[in-house]
Image: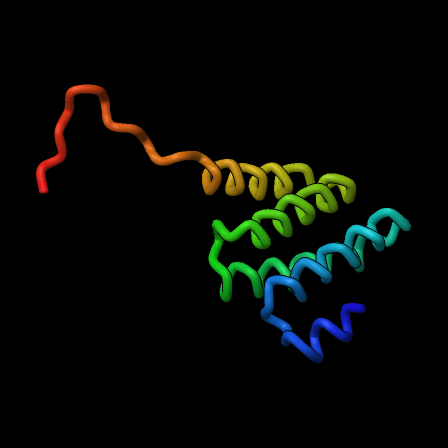
Length: 103
């Protein structure tokens, strides 16, 4: 399935990157954490570069990568990644009531 996505859509398409994430999750479930990590890291790098850090595909990949890192015992790196996700998903600060914007 992944080969079909790559052939038809290309390496950088969100559906291809999602498919890579799904394959990595399968590898993780089978206990192949190193290959899952490698695949997720590469997919995350591509998604970050091509889709942007706040794109839903990128965020999904970074969460999956953090989980694999946690399972590998790399807790600090996993927490750093999850902190980035939290920052990217935080809504922008709201203006206090009664304040006005000067344009």
